Length: 90
Image (cartoon, rainbow, N blue to C red; front, side, top):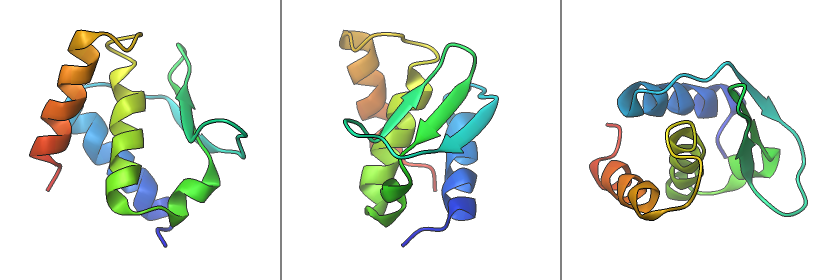
């Protein structure tokens, strides 16, 4: 299991690599999704994501951070997810 501190550290690394900024991170239970982001820079994650494997966590982190650049799930958004996940952060 990943701690909140470890997870937040990975969000910070991904944020730097992608070149986007966020304002705050929250954890709250969600019924239908693992994460969300707001136009004001808030990232929200379901705390159960901390129990998932690292690859799943990274996909969720990258997905939400890329929404700060690409607000939809278009072709460029999908290409950028694949690009960043293939490169990794370490």
